Image (cartoon, rainbow, N blue to C red; front, side):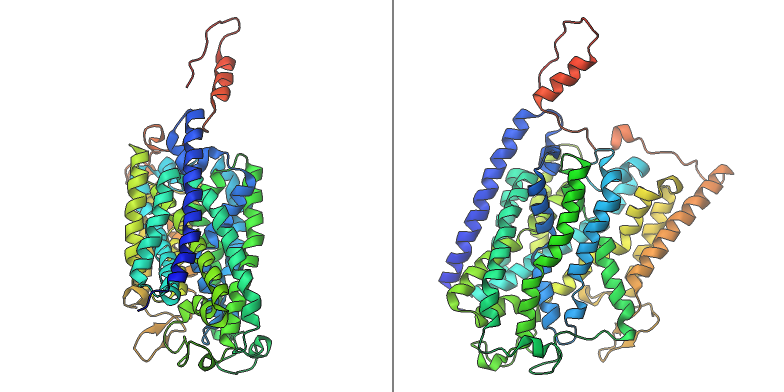
Length: 540
């Protein structure tokens, strides 16, 4: 394979800009650490709770608008078996961010939590929190793999280097600046990366639309030209699966640690809500360029392009249609700029996921644990990314794990806390896990043992699921948590079960008081001193 040196140079320039921003942000983080008292790990994880609201909007948006979102939307529209009607990401994420701002900001910020695991540690203790950390970890790792796989495929298709090498290089850059500055590096590089993404994709749209190899994409929306119309079809029998995917993203999206880090990094509840609502509007808008590229690709006679025949879909490369279209439907220098910007911006979700996994670790030597966790998760995510064939499927599977197993727990801990306990939490998790394993997942080779209503048996013997099983698992798990919790209380009252006690939160939980500057600390100490006392507070 011949290396495209101009392509590598283009990507190198964008990567250097991103890495330089990360270095600058890490220095800013060090300055904040010197000014503030309290837990320095809070600076790394939630930016000292003082991020500018504009930076917060950028980093919240960039977290969701990553490689899986951009390449996945283009893949769905281009895929003749799906189409625009199945592009549920823009709707799902917009609704998810709105729900998060409306219902989750206040209960999460009320006790100065730092991670999603903190309320579970407070209510149930460390053991239950450690068990519930497993699906959160798996969801984040698959998310990292999805984004790195998208990036690796992009560079492999366009720049002429192996996918494995591209994944390793990109993971190394993301890990490096995340290690250096924590949330500050992640947030400020998100600003640069999101700007690159908007510029790179919109810059190439006019050239894509005027490609001589493509037919009128508005005609191809409803008429079969070179493949099925890109609008797609939604049959009545598919309604359950479609609703399942919408709810998967809309409700499951608020159960990612990355969402809570952004909410907690702002100074006030009002700023956190503004961040969520603004991102809820911006995320669907940023999907428009990739949807257009997917639609034009579906309207293209690939035999008339430099790509040739058979088409990308026939070669099993629908997941990489965005970079393929940029390369073969745009002038060469336009595609170099667009791909360079796209490759750098795709990392905007990798760093967020890396930091979110790390920040759920133990309090002991937390800064060291964060750095080691970021490194290990980067390595594991890169390894999984090397087997990625479809960005869209990995994207959905990541949300699937979180939605099926974490959403019931999150809903109960925030809104039904009075009626749940550790017995219910264990039971709900176990039921969700067993049901999800029995239903199976072809993406990871898990056999589909349990039959469901409306199943279609495919030629290879696998079941094609039409029943909204993910939402069903979520509801069953929620009901199990509540019922078993009530049963446990009833049994304990009759001394048939060990008495239920609250967790020893003072010793075990890890959420922190807000970090204060030296001036704020002195003011608080002066307020606590008796009137007339000349005692001076000790500076940090």
